Length: 421
Image (cartoon, rainbow, N blue to C red; front, side, top):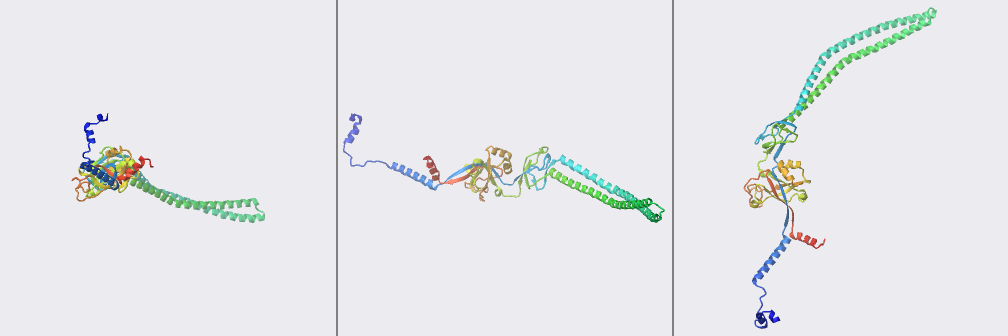
């Protein structure tokens, strides 16, 4: 049964005791080469896991800015009558760059001018007719004073007469020639005369006071009117200044117009962009260029200042020239708003495209300088592309947020696999 199962040649070879003194070849040189290769690869992998580094990078997108592109906006609301700039024009700080119609403010200025003319006319009338009226009032008061003084003099004479009469009647009363009632009547007349004199003296004092008040009232009216005129003049000056500021829009920057954002004849509101201005204060492009990039809010807190960044403009092929080297210099504390992005990027279409990614953190990148390269920046390739990197160019890149040894990533995974924590 067994003999039929095995081959005849194999049975004969096993039963023959020949060649028992020869070594049996277990392996050949090719197998040893394969084994050494495997051991070398394994050693290299273990060594790399302890001494190598694995970098965790986050993708970012943004734009290259020089910080010298200014968006000139309207400082008032109204119809844009005239836009006094064209692309390529050089603007100085303080130049009038637009005229905006202000009909309501203009109407207030005209009404205030008319009010000022009216109040000046009123003052002239007070000065002209007031003096005449004061003279008439003064004459009237003087006549009243003379009349009162005459009455006082007459009453005093009457009082002297009554006093003499009373003395005579007292003598006659002692002789029984007059009655007591007659003496009492004379005494009453004397008392009435004294009261009348006192009242007339009071009227005389009042007339003198009225004479003094005539000049005072006139001066007071003149001063009040002059105060009103001064107040109207200040209001007119303020309105004219407002009208000048809100009508003639002036540039706050010095530079060259690179883009027109509106046109004459349309209604603009306060803060509406009119045109973009490129500053002429700096000469070297590489001295001012920086990257403003954005990252989704879920990864925003992972980025810190000083982290390594690799950025490539959209006009450069990274496969051929690599990336521009840089470092993170600023990270926003909170997701940036659309208004904040417009302040930095100054490009509505780009902002709208970026906002489709959701809430974003803003990150500033400062690039390493290389005076020997054509672009003026350090690249991961030898010298980078032989083109100038212009501001306003969109870009993309990566920021290294973590650099760790490979073994540290393996061990936590093993612990988690074996449920050791």
